[in-house]
Image (cartoon, rainbow, N blue to C red):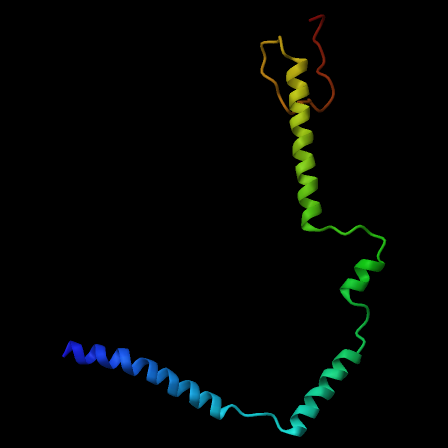
Amino acid sequence: MTEILWLLIVIGGPILIAVLLAYAMLNRRKRSTGEAAAQRSATRQLYEEKEGPSPLDKAVKSDEPRETPATRSFRAEQARANADEELEEGLEDTFPASDPVSATSTTTTGAPKQRRNGQ
């Protein structure tokens, strides 16, 4: 029983695929002359339509610098390098000290505290 099933799969599968391909190729409808002319006309109209300047024209004519992903990546890399340089400079400036280096500075906002009676 299983041999018959495998025989059907091995022989019937390619035959079924060939029949389906032949059916699709025979039923593929070619466009009529009127349909082809209408398509060419519609395509021509799309090319001739003016919707204003294209995004490419705007980018080329614009004096503003473009912000591309590569530009953003480059700026982020420069910022990381700058932060690394500042940290390295801070390490060199505080080398003999016992306190660890801080990459950020701390400030206290507000007016200075008032001292009490000579203290």
